[in-house]
Length: 334
Image 1: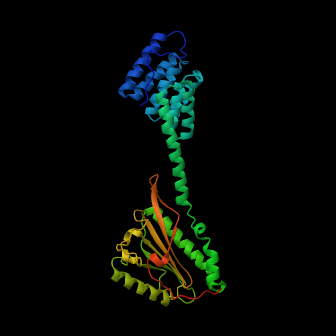
Image 2: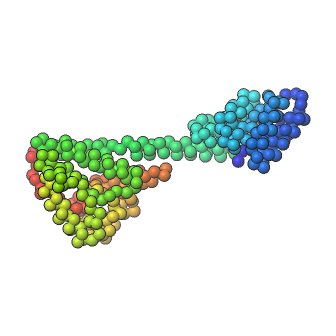
Image 3: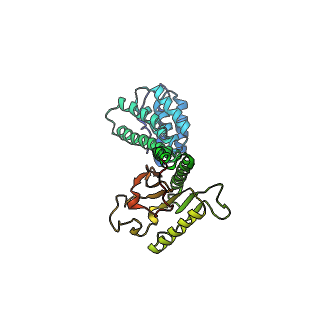
């Protein structure tokens, strides 16, 4: 907690009226210590009228205004303190505390560093510098995290697939549309995870605009019960494979949180073997076409109180497929 300067301290005081000024100041200090900051500020104001060049009075009133959260007034008094006594560290200390309350951490750090120059032995100022330096780092990282959360760009992680898709799908297959479907679905999943830290387990289908009966087949199918047992998993797969065929879909993206997979046999041949992401939260993203199959795990963490998805990690789909192949395999057109 900020402290007012003791009544015996005089910095830059003018001559005349000294006794009256000291009395007002001391009385203000008493109210300050009692927590009556409004009364303290009023008494410091009266004292300033008696001695307008006394930097300690402005410093004390700045401390009182800070406690009253009258930050602009407090900052003005701190600046006046510095003008009247430019080599007194207390003015810079007051300014730093006020700027800290304003969350102007870079400016606060500069003020505390100046205070330390005039009083290198001040442990209080050193502690402030250490604290504010950490706050500056935290604020910078929080902004970086927010930028990552707000500006999701999965295309940069999937760009290498363009060549592979163009070679395997062929131009007549419209691989560009399939690639866009993949990117958009993954980005939507990441954004949803950022907002709620959860996802509805679903399979999203890229339907054929000319062939699909859209009144009969929807572009998304919920699979929330698929991973409760081997039996439900098998039934779900059978249904989805038939759905993909009957709807004339061209591609599918499966999205499911890791936490919903309640039995390890989902991963072919893996059994109870430990997985290196076993302790990490996140979700699976499986991409299916007749030409290409891919699987990613997108881990997440909590930073600065925000959920943040990490870069997608490619998994061996032959070992870790969340669902078996949905489309009948076709040979490459290349």
